[in-house]
Image (tube, rainbow, N blue to C red; front, side, top):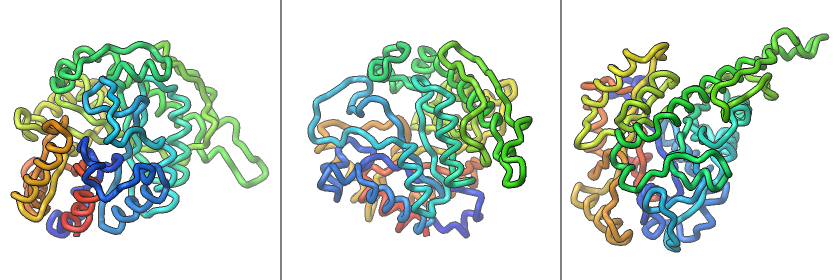
Length: 370
């Protein structure tokens, strides 16, 4: 993407890092041959450095309490997939400390974690990379997660429910409302221990600036302050929101940024109209920038990209249907598409999910960003 032609600073591009890629068959067709490589620090730092040197504005890291599966909420015994992830907070600390990537978006579960712990983790990351940390609160819709951590039981969704966002939002309404309360709690905790309360002079700690806040939302989201980590830089908040009332309401209420998921049924203009209307009706709505979330399969030509996707689907044994728009074509055509979205719809940026990181991620860095 020629950033001069896109008005520098007005359109940001992100790379979604996830294992060997987002397609279920990515490992089998990746340059990564040893699964252990995905769990080494060098793998992640190399991608952080490549993204930074290639002009990518931010990278995102995923969270998950239970192992990934090909079908949502259904465990499998597949031996030809990469399963498991490094902790995103630890990985983010590594990228912030050892690479020049401008921003790391860290996903963190809010359904089965304590807001005090998450507030401290994100504040610690912000101390490592001031101005470079964004938090993506993740609502857990997988009932297996509660089993893993012994948390409160959540609605048990069927795999087919994942493709009906309105059904998800309706069944998970309480969880989205809890998530809103959770984010507000974390933000209040960040205010309890401002870094300015620490001094190098005669008074080490200005106690009157540290607030012994006790903030209680829902029973399982009880938290008490002050935080144990001084907060000099407050992370921003980003929400991934599928096309439905509750996730849009969450984003409008608490997020600085929302990733919307366009599709053939719900193109970007319709999503923008829906989100802005919900934001208008949301009390105390914050100003939320809108980004598009897009899965990509790139090639030397459109035909080559289509052949790559067909090969991936053949190896996987089924047709990949991600929960957002899938772009299949050349980096040049994708550049034109993104320029159109920015100019016509006023999007603030895009997050790209590479089907195979060693192929599509490289093309994003080398061909899309210039």
